[in-house]
Length: 257
Image 1 (tube, rainbow, N blue to C red):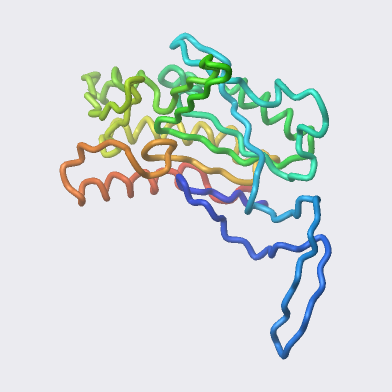
Image 2 (image 1 turned 180 degrees about the vertical axis):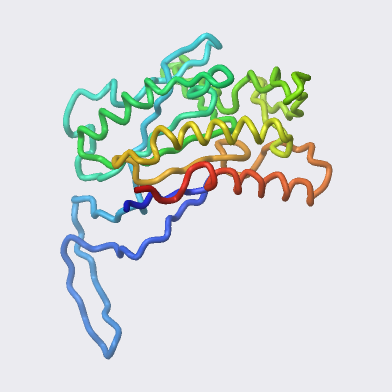
């Protein structure tokens, strides 16, 4: 039995019984208290599932929506040192709309390629998948080289209910780039989210390379702020957010054989 840690949205710290072990240290013992004085080192200490991690983006360099990104970091690596060999894991970023570009049609290719590369470098995989707007903008030399806007798929606005009628999922639009934040309490939205997370789990829950799953379910970058603002009441908002928290671990079990 192996465990997969699942982080909901922007939970920053994963509980662990593993303490940070200095590469070299001196210690002083007084009664039952041991004080450790780490020695300065240029070697990155290993602290499994916590602390610093390398981040890569399984996002295309461009697409039909004229979004632009730098593309995956691994495609631009030219030296072994750039893989940060002393860092044992890598967080791979992707979004719902990249992985399910059409309703029920999935595209895992770039995510798989990114996983394959980093696994070959000996790193454990940390999924960082956002179902809400994930945006980046970067200029170099006065030129916009990174203007990526992804998250929940556009086809949600055309989704239909079980009777074939328009679901009319409400949304809030933020920014001039039209980032859509959908009503998480809409039952059709919840059905579509459940189907996506289940498909993700079916494909990767038994993959021994995956150590941690961070599914970001509400707000900008999935960090539980600046999301849909039409709930009408605090109680309705709480119910909608709680429903997303319930969907994720049910669809993506914490442990698998």
